[in-house]
Amino acid sequence: MSEPFPPPPAERIPTGVRPWRTEDAERWVAAGPAPWAHPLWSCLALIGTGLWAILETPDPVCTPADPCGADWWGMFLACTALLGVYWVWRRPGLALIPLAPFTVLQLISPSAPATTPVSARLGFTAAAVFTGVALWERLAARRRQRELIERAAGPERRPVPASARAFPRGRTTLAVAGALLAVTGLCLWQGLTTEARENERDARAERLTVVVVDRGEDSITVRLPGGDTGVVDTLFPGSYEPGRSTVVFVDGDRVRLAAEPYDAFGWQALMLLFGLPGTTLLVSGLAARARWRRLVADPVPVLRVRATNPGPRIRTRVFAVDAPRGRRRPALSWVTLPPTARDVPGADGHPEDPDDPGFREVLARAAEQAGDTSRVVDATLYGAVADGAEAVLVTGPEGESDGLVECGITPVRARSRFPDPPDRGRAVKRGRRDALARRVGEETAERLAGEPLVVHPSPARRVMAFALVALGGHLVGSALSAAVEWGSALPLFAMASLFFASASLWRVTVDRRGLWVTRLWRTTRIPWEDIRMVHHRNADTLRVVDSTGRADFLPVGGALEELVRRRVPAVRARSRAVVAMWILPELRPAREVEGGPGGMPMGPLLVLLGTVVGVVSAMWG
Image 1 (tube, rainbow, N blue to C red):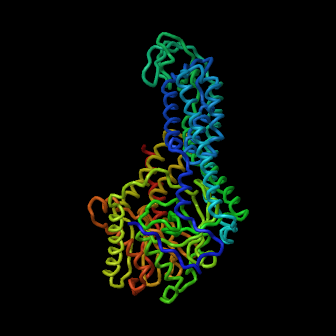
Image 2 (cartoon, one colour; image 1 turned 180 degrees about the vertical axis):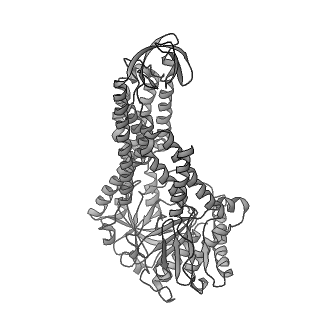
Image 3 (spheres, rainbow, N blue to C red; image 1 turned 30 degrees about the horizontal axis):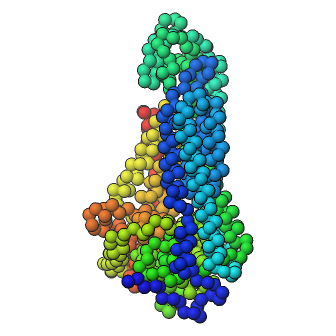
């Protein structure tokens, strides 16, 4: 039989803050959107009817009088459609903005009524109407949830903690969005410039009327006025019947159909590749900042709750105060982060002082996060919380004065109204894996007998990283020698290859004084006293956070081998040993590394390798 969590001592409850009880939490969850309004059904309806309309639309008929050039308007509609589908899933408020205009555009667009069947257009319109009704239901559910939170909190309103008011919500998102949109602008400029240059060349070329002799899958054969034949590439071979005449532009060896001028599809594809995530992040970042300003502007409802797994960049799960122990699914959850690294309890404690309660709390929290346990703590929830809203959580029984302030870096996610799935022993298996991980880390550290520890990915992953960079250099060199008009986009592919290679070319050396972290371009020394967290995440990443809040994410690898072969690979055992050494000082090495950490950053070597391979490919490709 389930038992409720033991209540905290009365003297530790913040004055005037009401508890969020199970019946209130259940009413809050039940106020969520109806099952038919789940975004899955709306997205399936939009995608299905959209694909139906695309498949039913015949290929355009290209003629010299009506050429098939770069379709910038179609690209805009495609971008709007993809953004709309994403916002239907994640941002119902934003999805309502483009939904109606896009539905009207697909009905009144000059090309749509003439080519798309009426049934397909009406089907998409019906899907859009259903989506609009579902979005309205989801927004109404959020209003209902906010009203229930305000009613449960009573008249008590408090401002959010002072350290949370200056939290830079959405700053990283906006920075990444700016970089992506800058690349999108470069692709747009290149596409328009290249299109104008090609059109000017067509205007200077000789205009000839030719006869179509034959056609293939992506080309046609024409007879020139002199009697010679030539093969011309085409995107729409069905527009040219053999025996009929058409018009071409001849400029030296270059022959282009007048009905198909330069098509900037490649640049448009790059614009979609960078513009879609850039626009999504930009709008999401601006919306997050707006929601955060509204949260911190005025006093907000406050409730006393219970939370599990509090900590930086860990999904925090919130339960009612009197929720049963056996309950696994929380009422709400979201990913949190302290406003600054100095807000972590024990940040100023001395790691060698066993009587420092703040540092002991950090060690206990790190140990539990390393094992992904579910320690339940008292917490205070700030905000009129609803699905997709912002909130602040202060964990710890002392409330605001001594608790850890956690600000959300993602919107709140409410629990669905569907019943809890059966456990089927997953919790037991997860607990066994966590216990095995802790034991392997401690045993590996003990076997070192005080000697320094070196952690790096397996040799196979490092060889694959060098091979990836060499392949990228070969592709860049080959493309430069074959298609110069793509030269401005080639640095993007080179940067992408370096980015993926950096995940396999890192090195961590552990000695008596701290960690040496070697990345692609530099080596950083982090003393033990400046380390705030070392954590081996379930996402197969070793994470090291220093006193300034700077975090190193080091992909470890070996998760598939551990799952299939039922044994812990050496690299994962060594990475877990680093975690064990940070938690238990007695396991740390007894001496320092002589002459530095050894090994050099691989970034310069990668650049040299990629350059040499690229030059060779360009010369002999």
